[in-house]
Structure formats: C-alpha cells, structure tokens
Length: 313
Image 1 (cartoon, one colour):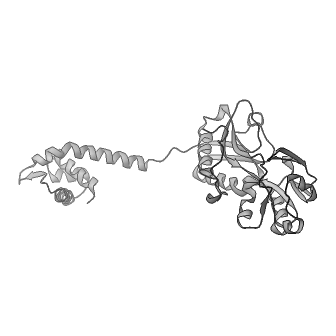
Image 2 (cartoon, one colour):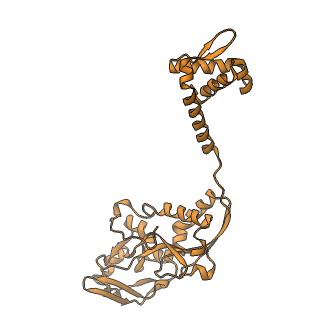
Image 3 (tube, one colour):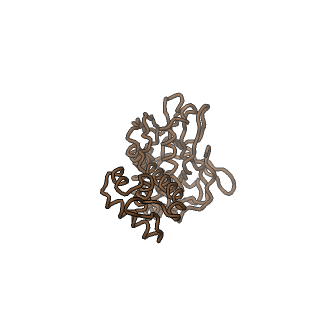
C-alpha cells in the first residue's frame, strides 16, 4: 500500500463527497480512488465511510482519524518537497595557494572533487612552497605548513604534519644508523631547501642543531623521496610524503627518540573573506577530508597524542 496516495484519496473523497468527484479532481479513474480507499480500510481494519447509492459519509472512525491523516499528508509532502528541492548552487571564484608536494599527492585531487560538487565555483590554484600573507598577495585561502601568523588572517588547522628522518634499509646497512643527530655529519644528506640547512632536534638532554652539508638539495619533496628510495642518502620529509614508503618497508625512520618540531597543515583566510559562502564551503569540505585522520595516516599508527590545532574551530 502506498500510504500517501491512499491518505490523499481518503481526504479527496471527504472533501468532494463522492468517489467520482474525487477522481475528477485527482485526474484519475473512479476505480482508482475506490481501490485506494479500500486499501486504506483493509490496512487499518476500519470502515472509514458509510456508503449508500445516494451518498458517502464519514463513519465515527473516519471522523476520529481525519485530522491525523491531514497532518500526516502535510508532513509527508513537506519531507518530499525538501528531498526534491535542489540545493543552493554556490557561485564564485576562489584563488588558492597550496604547497607543491601536498597538492600533487592529495590536495589537488581534493580540490578537483570540490569543483565537481560545486559546478558554479571557479578556481585559481597557485602551487608554491614559500609562506604567503593571503591579504597582501590576494588569496582567498592559503594552505600552509610553516609556522607564523599574519594580522587580519584567520587560521584553521586541518591536521598535524610530522617530519621524519628516513633512509632505505640498504643504505642504513651499508652506512650505519645514526645514533644521534650529530652523526648526520657522516652521512649523505638529502635536504628540502625551503626548510633550511639547519636541522633542529629536541633530545633527552635538550635541543640539538645540526648544520647539514647536503649531497642533494631540492625544493621538491617528491624528488627527495625518489632519491632516498634509490638509497642515495638520508632525508627529512613530512609524513604525508613518506608514509606509504614507510608502510611498505621501502624506507625506515631513524633518530626516532629525537623530536622534530611538527608543523600543522593550516588554512589561512583573510578575516574579510571568512563569511563568503564559497570560502565556507571549501573550509567545510577540506575539514571533512582531513578528519578524523588525514588520508595518508594508517589508523593503527594514530597514537592519540596529537596536540590541538592552531585556530581550530
């Protein structure tokens, strides 16, 4: 039984006073209206109408349930209207800055899916690794990792980005595992240039700063990953770059007992643009993509000791 059709037939007959008039108003055959009322009476085990050759009137049961059926029809029609109502289509243009490797590995695909979900939005994506002030450089949203804040800019943390020191098992077997950060002086170092050539650690006895002399320097994390996987040396990269290689055993972490300052992947938004609907939609989308954990993080490796994000709301 289609409850909504049967309820509507019952109300039409009540208002029209006959099956034939109810059928005319509904634009269907009289037999259709009669069948729907019969189905409702069979389902409820109630006689809802008293029928004679000259008239049709509500029974006591019909009068008793009339208002409840009217309410039910209104509620069901409201639900159907809300389901079929087309969602508000967002329109607008967004200019976004994002880090190179994060975009190549994860963020680029996320932004493509965001555009698919919002065909009324256009996007200007600028990929670079230096920090930017989105107010001064005209960005609606800047995705950043480096610490630092700007006046008039709202920060929203997406997730922690750990930095790990890694090398291949073969390299470590041939050259030995560094025991302390100072041992890096005896190793081939592959350096991510935007982070500088001084690697800082927090050890059991306090901070340690090591000035490295790289065998290879690059501003492209993927290039350093490829070099490390070829056994060319030791590198320090963000977890989202090396997570898959560590999981598969192609790379191993070293100096695990020496803490490296972690970065947060953050959204930097000019205060004046935080209320714009396209910006709000992008923020909500990216937060859902990075939560409850970022796509590169194995659930089993989640230690549960992650500190609260900067500017998290």
